[in-house]
Each structure stands twice: as C-alpha cells, then as structure tokens.
Length: 305
Length: 292
Image: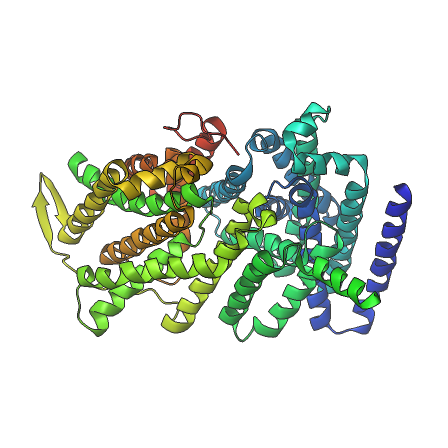
C-alpha cells in the first residue's frame, strides 16, 4: 500500500517539478492559464476526498473558498502572505469542523441541498457584515504577480493530489469507501463513521480555503457575491464528474478538458461554452458513467488486446 | 397594514406552492431532483411575454400554450434522457445525485439558449396593474388574478390527489413503489404523467410570475432554490406538504422582511431551511419518512 502511494506520489512530484519550468519558458497568458488549471485541480482533488470517497456530494465547497478569501481580504497588508495563506486554510478547516458533524448526519439529497444552503447562508452573512461595515468590495493593493501566484497554486495542486492519493490508498480511504457502499454495514464492522466522515470533510476544506486566498490575489479584488458564487461549487462537481471522480487522475482530465474549452470559447461565446458544458455533463452522466477516465482506460485495454 | 401584508404573503405563497408542488411530485414519484424546475418557469414567463408583445394576446390565453409546451418539454426529457438510464442499476443506485447532475445540465442549457435567443436583459410588460381596494388593502389587480389562479390550482391539486384514480395512483407510487406495481399501476405511464404534470404546473407558474415581475433568462435559479426550501419545509415526497410549506414561506418572508429589512431576506430563508434540514429532515409535517 505504501509502495503504491510512494510510486504515485513520485510521478505527481516529477510532474510538478516539470511544471515549475512553465513561467521561465512561456508568456504571461500561458502562465495565467496554467494558474487557472492548477487552481481547479487543487479544488477538484480536494472535493473528491469527501464526495468521491464517501458519496456525500458537497454542492457547497465554494463556502471554503469564500471564507479563505474573506480572511485573506481582512488580513491583507496586516499580515505577511506566508501567514495569510495557512490562516485561510485554518479558517476553512475551522468552519468545516463546526458544521461537519451536524451536516454529515443527513444523507443523500438532503446533504446535497444542505451544503448548498449553507454556502448561500454564509455568503449572505458576509454580504450583510460588509454592508454593516459600509464596505463595498475590497481592493488588494500590492498583490504578487502571476508568476509567484502560479508557484503557490502549483504547490497547492501538488499537495491536493498527494492527499487524494494517500487517502485513497490508506485504511482511512477504505473506511470512507465502505461508508459510501453501505453506511450501516460500515458502522456494524466497527468504523467510527461520524468521525471518519467529519475528518474527510475537514481534510477536503483546507486547500479550497487557501485557493480562495490565491483567487482574490489574482483578481486583486474581494466581492462576496462573486467569490461565493454557487457556480463555482457546481463547476467543481461538473469537472470531477466529467473526468471521473473515483480516482485522482479523473478530475485532472475533467479540469484539463473544461479549462481548454473555456479558453477556446469563453471570451467570444460564453453562452455557447455553458451550453457545451451542460450537454457534456448530461452526456457523461447518462451515457458514460465513470467519466472520461474509465472510457479512456477501456479504450487503452481494447487497443492493447 | 396587516391585511396588506397578508395578501402579499398569500400571493407569494401561492406561487411558491405551485412551483414546489411540481418539484415535489417529480421527486416523490421518481426520486429525480429537478434543479431545472425554475427554467421551466422561465419558459412559461417568456411565452406570456412574447404572447402579449408580439401577438397582443393576454397572459391567460398564453397560459394555454405555456402549459402544454412545458408538459411536452417534460415528456421529451423523460423519454430522451431518463427512460433508458433508469433501467440501468448503476444509474438507479445513485439516482438522486445523477438526476441532479443531468437536470443541472438541462438548466444550464435552457438558461443560455434563452440568453442567446432573447438577450440576457430583463423584460416586463404591463398587465392589469391598476390598484383596487380589497378588504381594506390596496392591491394591483394582477396580484389578485395571480392569487385566484394559483390558489384554485392548489385546491384542485388537493382534490385531484384525494378523489381521482390517477391522483390516487400517483400517491400510491410515492408511498410504496413495489406495492403500487403489484396492484397493477402502470409505473412508466404514471411516472411520465407525473413529470408532465409537474412541468405543466411550473409553466403556468411562469405565466403568473411574468404578470407581476420582470423576467430574464436567469430568473429560474432563485425560484428553484425557493422551491427546494418549500419542499424541505413540507417534506420531500409529501406533495400536499409542499402546499402548506409554500404558504408558510410566503408568510415568513413577507412578515419577516416587514419586521426587519429586505437585506435579511436571504439569511432568514436559508437559516430556516438549514434548521429544518438539521432538526426535522422529514419536513415540518412529515411523520418520519426514511432519510435516505
């Protein structure tokens, strides 16, 4: 088991080391695209730790991004960046700890709707706090350039994949999958389901919190309505599902595919981009269960035969 | 003052009830989470808008087009996307999550097609907006029409589920799927009918909404969210519960905003929603359905 983690971790680390070269060989446009790609990899790989492993589909992961971003906006220029980033992660983890236990008691569609409702509730609470403070949007002066942010995003993406691989191959991951397949049976054989689910939930919240801080450093602007947008949660789910959310490689395929599509279509035909995303989502769920990853695997096995 | 608020609460509540009724009917019979429900409302609203601005046809006449159009859309979605998938055990194992994703795709497509065809701008039309005095309150006529129609449909729905064979068959299917099949209820046909009825109600609701509010391609999403809140209040799968839930939310929203400030509206709704989900996931009225 540890051998597999070490091997997969080695491949991921090698890929990350290669990716360090990008800002030295490419112009700012491609570094920006690379940043977007890495940010979404970090988000989807974190998401599968709870939703891929346990089957508890979170439609509210944007709440962790938003909280991380809010903490970063509040402490901007007060604290140094190397403190802001971990603090954003801690804030997200604290929120996940607070809501994890009660939320994970409800299952199925209730959990999905609950996570969504929670992220909207926190959004409007932040909106009202900002209104009470008479602040309309916060500008981040002196944010680092795209190359520095790229390296930070690379570190987060690397960490998220390592965590996803390690969880998947560990006893912890087996316990989470047991919960997904049959929660009562898992409890009967002695898995502390409450604690395991909560731990997975907290683990999947930390990196999104830090990503939130990076996202507003990139846009140099904090607006709660934008950073807490439910569309982000939905995109995370869509990318993971299109790629295949059962293995760490799946979400990366989904992210790559959708970001490529976004770069091609978003600027000129945003509506067409969304229509294609919707159609892809339907097609994968109805005709391609398991996502692109499983289909690719089948094609490779068929070709090898 | 208070009759004024009460009428406003009833108008909002009856619309919510009508939208939530369809959503819950679809969930109850097939376990499909229709997050594209608000987009069906949006389509109904655009039918009414184009009816009055291109053909000078009143919204009540347009409703005769919007309702069958919405029902047909439901049939196309069922036959095209779900009939085959629902035979696969793998799809059915996670039917709720899968249907949520499929309908989300449908919702994104409908929103953006509407935005391409009709531009993303807000639109509105004037219809019966003179003010009348009604039991001590001053109300525009169009709100009274909305209240009368939505209220009548809700009452008709109660009678339908109590009295008619089809209504009873749908209720049986919601309560015990296997047993319903055993006593000879044709599942596929009743499912299709429920889905079409749910979509039809949403189409009608769209016509009614357009009579009093501005419409846009993206108006559906907040309505879907509100409908889910109503459904949770009344209990998922409890069709009549969503009628009471709708009225409850209308009252809560109208009086809550009047007592505090409009900016607290969303916080209030989501707080109630989350509290109900955590404390009574079977709904305020539910008598302990299974949570899964």
